[in-house]
Image (cartoon, rainbow, N blue to C red; front, side, top):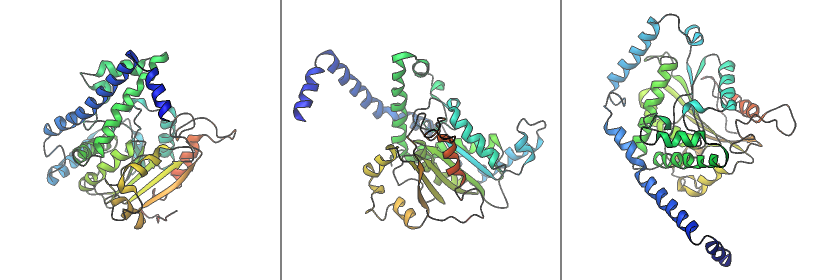
Length: 350
C-alpha cells in the first residue's frame, strides 16, 4: 500500500500535484467561509420574519388565509375546490442547482402523490442548500460560475462536482451545533412561506395539519433541522420521509412525530452517517436518534434495488430488470404504503 502511494505521488509530481494541492486549499477556505452567508442572512432578519413572535405568526397566517379567500379565478383549482389538510414538502439532493431543476422522475413522483391523495398539495420550491431559499443562480457574486457549470457540456460537465461540494458544505452547516439552529430556522421560514404560497395554512385548524417533509440525500438533514421550528410555528403533525437520505441523528428526532428511512439495496451513501456520526451508533442509547428508535418513532425500510441516484435511483425512470415497473414507480409504491396519509392510521414498526 505504501509503495502504491509513493508511485501515485511520483506520478502526480510537478504541476499536477500543485494543482491538486491548490484545489485542496481552496476547498478548505471555501468550507471555512461557508457559514458566513448563513450568518449574514440571520442578522438581516427580524423576529417577526423568523416566527419568533407567536402573535405575529398568527397574524401572518390569517392574512394569507384572507388573501386566498378574497382572490377569484385561482389557477390552482385543486386548492380552491378541495379541503387541503396535508402538505408534502420536497427537499432535493446535493446535486441540485435550484428548485427549477427537478428531474422528470421527481416531477412524476410528486404529481402521482397529489393524484393519489387529493387532500394533499406538494411544495416543490424550497431550496434546502440556502437559508434564504435562494438558488445558486440567484447569488449575485457567484451566479455566473454556477450557471456556467450547470450549462457545461462534454468533459466540462464533470465540473458539476463543485455544485455538490458547495451543497455538501451547507449540509455540514445544517448538522453543525454552532450554525444548525440558524440554518434550521431559515429553512423553516422558507417552508412556511412556500406552503402558504401553494395553499394558505390555517391558523386554527380543527385538527393538526399533516405535514410531510420528504427528502433525499442531504435534504433529509436539512428537513430534520427545520422540524423543531416548524413544530413551534405550525399546528401540524410532522413526519419526515427519507429516500436514501443522510442525517446526523441529532436534529429533529426529539420533535418529529415519525421518521421513515427508505434505503435501496445498492445505495451505500446512507451507510456513511452510521459510521461518521456518534449519535447513530447503537451504543449511544441516549442520543435523539436511538431514543426515537426505542420509542418506535423511527422506522427503517428497504425500498428495493435502488442506487443513490441516476437511472436506477429512487427517481429513476428505467425499468427494473426488464419488468414493467420503473425505479421511481417502486419508490412511489413504497411511500404510498406508509401509514402517514391519514391521521387515523396507526403506525407500526416494520
